[in-house]
Amino acid sequence: MESFLIKGGVPLHGEVTISGSKNAALPIMAAALLTDEPCVIRQVPALSDTRFMARILQSLGATVKFERGTLTIHARKLRGHGDYELVRQMRGSVCIMGPLLGRLKKARVSLPGGCVIGARPINLHLKGFEALGAKIEIEGGYVSATAKKLNGATMFLGGRAGSTVLGTANVMMAATLAGGVTVIESAACEPEVVDLAKFLNAMGAKIAGAGSPTITITGVKKLRGAEHEVIPDRIETATYAIAAAATNGEVTLKGARAEHLRAVIDKLEEAGVRVERRGANLLVRRNGRLKAVDVTTLPYPGFPTDAQAQMMSLLALAPGISIITERIFESRFMHVSELARLGADIEIEGPSAIVKGGRPLSGAPVMASDLRASAALVIAGLAAKGVTQVNRVYHIDRGYENIDGKLRQLGARIQRVEET
Ligand code: EPZ
Image (cartoon, rainbow, N blue to C red; front, side, top):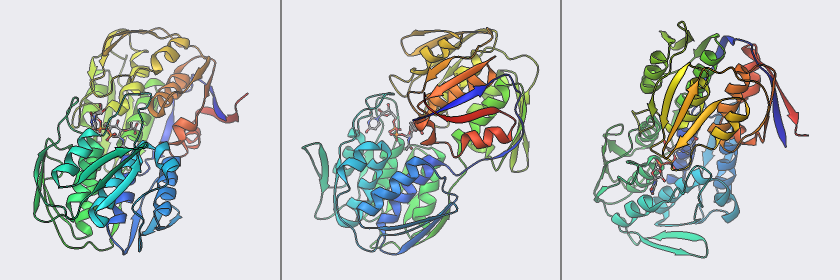
């Protein structure tokens, strides 16, 4: 297993190009299952998650070619169920259910278990499929959805924490080939849902309202192959912006989309960070001393839960008390105890973390527990005095393309080593 060795204390400087969005690419790859014609998807990040999804699509019978960020997927013939083991290992793969149900009127996948950040049930996905007329069965660790015919319906997909991103994506994909009109209320408004709808419409679907809480899908008989370029990754953008601020550097984020990051930019500016739009780029640097701020994670356009851990690393450096409240996932504070190893002073009170910021951090061996927690530990290590060893970086390779290479490009002293 690999680790990162980070010698901290170097302000990041220079330019970095933002990769395509993992959370847009995964459902878009699954959507290619809706047609028997080839689909070409560009700006797909080279990550273990996208490679994994490619293997799952192949296990369903599709051919997949990945060259220099461009994927060609051709699902000429399809099997109704994916490789149990493969699907079980990556939660995001649950979004193959909608396309399989839409095209084959049957889908059977391993029930995704919980993960370290929360229970993560899929009851809302299944509620949507049932509303379209599918029969749902859970047996032997599998969940299956079958239907003679899918019929459009109006449904409310809001849950405990508000809307569901992949739930909206899954039901939207199934509804593209259903008879009649489907209306999803309390739909997720994330840019990744909008990007998926754009690709589906390029395939001949009739989707309106993506990006708003009410999405209307008029079913069609058949979808065709299409070409699409995936949006830049807004969470990768937020991660590099926060790293620039935490190290008191100055970084240009090439190809970043500021309009997808309003809540993050707003909180960074409140915390004493300057974020300037320069054409298709963002320039990020400190604007004097860091300041403590309160952050609450919410569905889009609120502050993204996927940037919560990284923001905590920054606020550990800001003098004063910051309160970070996690409203989306019930146990997404695994990084707190690891940040404490680097000297941060953070207490958990129910859904909130009380950050007493301003203490200098010092390097130590720490353990990554999930994708975004590992990004937070890398940021803290870059800001800390001395050497930090971040173990189990396979977590970070799931969602960040060549992060150590990109950070070295910005002057960071980071190495990828075999874990000792
Ligand atoms: C997507 O997960 C992202 N993953 C997550 O990013 C992200 O954290 C999350 O959206 C929220 O923004 C991908 O796109 C692959 P949800 P998803 O359904 O769709 C509850 C990362 O770091 N819920 O919007 O699985 C759920 O438990 C990952 O890149 C139900 O109760 O998240 C959670 O509390 C981590 N029932 C809340 O809703 C359901 O049927 C939001 O989950 C579905 C969800």
